[in-house]
Image (tube, rainbow, N blue to C red; front, side, top):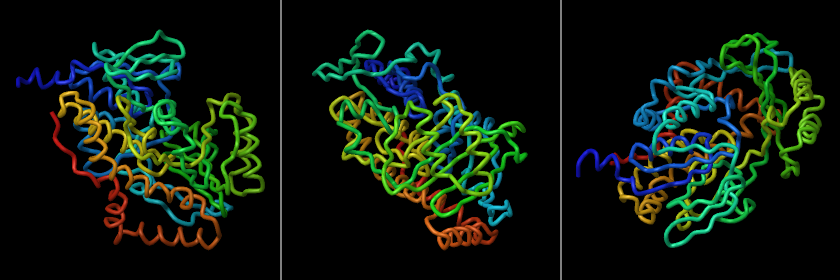
Length: 408
């Protein structure tokens, strides 16, 4: 087989990817390199900028980023985030959380990472992006998948990939209602922008009282802007409309009433938001599903095994894109063989990432004062210089727990 034939081993396939956040463009890049035709549909009107910072850690993430040809650019656009400091209600420092714990080997804004991969693929002859639209129905036939869209005309694809996040419509259409797979982990998270009144420069301050946390951080060195992150516990899932800003503002304000430190200023900034697009608010939850594919439809990223936070979801997404595209190439496009190999080779890795994600809520918002003190004491010890190397190794364990094949 010639080099050209190997590079075009998937040229007979046309895949539809739903979602243009991280997993979608990562898979589009991997598939396009192997000659496949790819259409990416995204419900947002354009690529989403900004978002939370995401990190990569360990040799597995590095290998995939290098294989994609974006390692240097990710480094060039990294946040250079420093330590994050846990404080008392009066702002007195209690303990520093090392950058290796919170930011990994390299950290970048989610929007910047998506932009890097989008720029690498948007002008390719075999990649098409469709913004402002989403899948309406899926109907599988022996020859492919007939797809209707909310806006565009119906089309037929060989394979369909759900890369549309924790609340995936593709998963709902192909596998059933979200309630069957989403596991609530007892906490909620919110994020929005705030003026940088603390004068932070690539650092963060974090304050917790039992069952809730507020942090203010500056990731990009902009002296004017900062970001607020809120995490609070909830005994049950909350019922709210994702499109109703006022309802979400009311829920958060009630949960944070009476909290000290900078919580009142954060609530003032929250009340001043004018669009639901300015607020991120969701349950901390995970997807647990028995299989990642059914017929010609396969799930990747948060749609298949995601966690809202703490589970290295971005790292898992790029690794999944590497494995799925590689297995399709190794199987010369035979989706049955490729999907089975993708699941067998990747599921254990995904479960390991999910396992550590279950600790995110209790770590950030411990339920009692005793748990708060215990958390701070533990990280004061682990963050000390004699144990720094061990601590780094522990934070990389889940991120490196997979042996990557070298694919065509």
